[in-house]
Length: 353
Ligand code: SF4
Image (cartoon, rainbow, N blue to C red; front, side, top):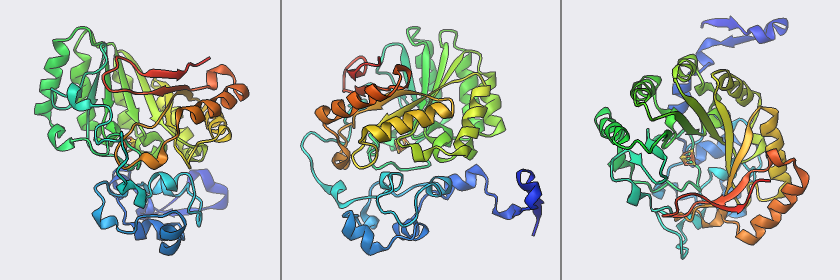
């Protein structure tokens, strides 16, 4: 056994087994769990899962597997079936409901996906599907049915997408999306970023990622160097839905990202049973501000098949937001928005003050 002394705990002479310290790649690949494994980690019985929240014990039939990385699971409260972090990853029987108005492609992204791996919906911005992988499977995800098999990332596919960028001088911002783009290797990200950097009209690189929150270990030195080398502006939009998601390890990751000169924003999805109260949203905004992140968007749920049980209607959302507005300074109030298929921008439900 190889051991080392943890420098942060020298006075207590704490010894950590090196073979217990997992790399982010190991944590990422170990994120897929069976339902039994997840419940066992949290000391929750299968009966409690099935009876008290109508959980779906038949996970063999799931088309969207259970995924949650260990550092995120560690922030859940043991024994609490209603923990707001846990509820984001637990499959319920209601996922099988057929709800009118809910579809597998609520934003009709297929209409804007003529080049594999690239979605060009908004005039000045193009979105790269960098990878189909995610560290976590959020049950409300609007891309849970996305045809990733037709958008399998490869350098050949990206070459086509890069040609498209070169031919469209109106595009000045590239958004890395997925999946979660930071689930890609640094080598892949570096290859892609270096090529995009050579296209003169691309001024801004934006990364939409949940990894700094659910697996902050991902923010390693090679990624930071890659970001540092990007010649233009960079924006990192993290995705956090609840204050309990943000601990000191997330703060460390954000601190490192900020040192690269990136602007860091957060987007949240308004979710029934997770964050549908003014106090939950106020606490989230305050916690984000504590770690140096500004709230950006609060999204109404996209009407994706299998997620209707998370929906909050517009009237209730506006009522909650009115209380949030009354309690927070304007710079901590996210914009309440809905994304609609075929609209040239998001629809503001409540503008930021
Ligand atoms: S991390 Fe983002 S892309 Fe991945 S499942 Fe969650 S919401 Fe969807």
